[in-house]
Amino acid sequence: MPRYLIGLDIDGTTITHEGELREVVRETIAQVREAGHHVIIATGRAIVGTLPILDRLGITEGYAVCSNGALTLRLDPELEDGYEVIESITFDPAPVLTLLREHAPTALVAVEEPGVGFKVTGNFPEGELDATERVVPWEELMTHPVTRVTLRQPEASPEEFLELVERIGLHGVNYAVGWSAWLDINPEGVSKASGLEPLRELLGVDPEHTIGIGDQRNDFEMFAWAGRAVAMGNAPDEVKAAASEVTGHVDDDGLVPVLRSLL
Image 1 (spheres, one colour):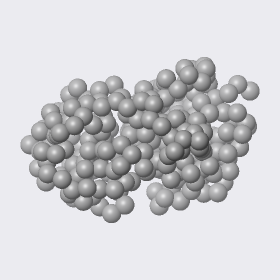
Image 2 (cartoon, helix red, strand yellow):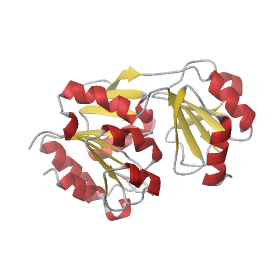
Image 3 (cartoon, rainbow, N blue to C red):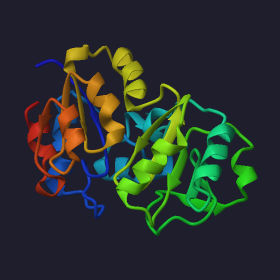
Image 4 (cartoon, rainbow, N blue to C red):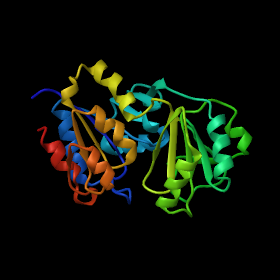
């Protein structure tokens, strides 16, 4: 069997929404890697939120794509931190932040500080950001190029939030609405797919031997990139429609049969 490259989402795919990593999932990922396939975590999480998952999976070598493709890591236990950033794509957040402040003045906004945490306009609901939060004035959010801007409106319904996003009219960036009233904004053209494609070329994997597995709207580009696009059973209907197949719910370890098909 040829070697495959598996782009693997974390939340709602590899771990449950309660943050549980099932032992059968961990074991199956290890078996797939032992068989010679490339398992590359591709996540919207920041670096500091991704590293603990990699540690729990026992993945200490290879690559990982973080921040929806804006950051690519090379993993090596010989390095001081166990990783190095080999690709970092940033943009000027000022135009986007100006629009957000105009159209959603009460919303929570965060900009990522890679490897450190987030600068925020106010504290996000507990446990939602996967890194340290530091509350700063709006103006400080605009001082440096960033890999990502996140907008969160906890009191809004998903429908209200989608209307808000359409009203803002974002241009010149790549953005994805998350599982709730959550919006991640990345540099234009940046996605999980744009992070995975250079790794596919580097590892010498044929395009037809790529698999993308995820459960949210930030997986659309990865699904279009992958030779085999798999949506989790817990994904929204529009995400399922974008995939070539649908597996079981994350609570039913839906990832396992997909990975076992490679063994």
